[in-house]
Length: 411
Image 1 (cartoon, helix red, strand yellow):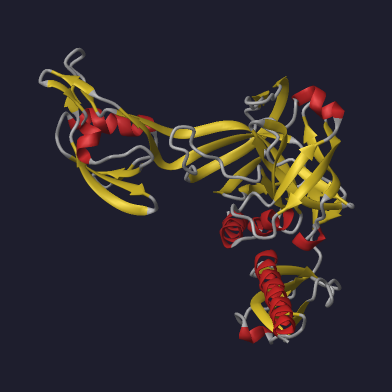
Image 2 (image 1 turned 180 degrees about the vertical axis):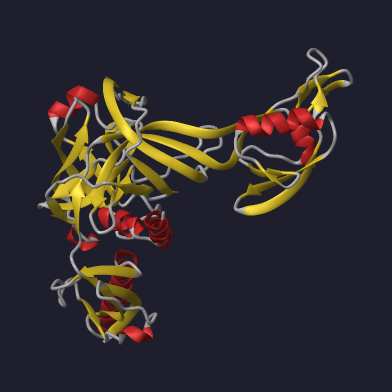
């Protein structure tokens, strides 16, 4: 009898453990927000025992409903019995975009000037560091001096020289917070000029790949990640920016431990403007080219397996074979939703894998735009991360983009 009780207790313990592990799996696998295209389901009701039930009315979520989408709250049940979590489901119409893949030039000017480095000044009284003494740090963004908005590095340099050692009031941003410091320049012993001991930057330029064109508002999305300052590793605060045509004139191949890059020439002609620089990419407005439209996949439509990327590394935009090896339904980073692997020998012979400049290359699977390349694995450049297409498309119609669109129409 005792043996039977022990066996029964063991079975119950194992069964309880399996339930607990299953619940943890469901909690991890199902995101808190789900996008569903009209006419499709997120999961079959018997998929691994998961059922989404108890859809509540739209007004119980956020009172927002439009002709494009509606939202409802769903409860996730295990085996249709045990409630696990609640998630918000957005039901929307299928979106379509024109596919990118073209290389483009990026020219960006910062909102304020970025402190890239601080340096000592050799004075008659010894070596001193005025910036450090004032509390200025690398990565700070200088916005104004004595109430005057700083527009460029040359403007700031002129203000510094004119101060001639008198205290000036500097307004700066640090981690999104406004800070005021009082700063004095020092006379350099060797030249007699007043120095701030600051290295600052107000612009950047480079190459990237267009991911898509959104015909709804003539916007574009590219890169799949933000543009960062090379010295501070902070997202560059955008004042204004432009995109221009670019011509590839060389490829430095990637190899284990070394990331290659596309080398190119940027045209002086602007073909569009950049309005947003954020973690999901760069976005702006451009006259969309006349291309066939392609449907945009939502997360659950993306599958592990064969796919293609469109990129320009050899003078023209071509499609190359890749494999989506892993999908993260709850990624730890906003632009690392998938792991991809380059499998096309043509591209590997040209680039060695993923190189700088390929960021933003659109990924196509089953005739749909599913994502864009964002990062390369340094120790294995054949592989890298990618962002989901639905995230980029959402940013292309975000509030800031809508605001810029209204400004553009008004002008």
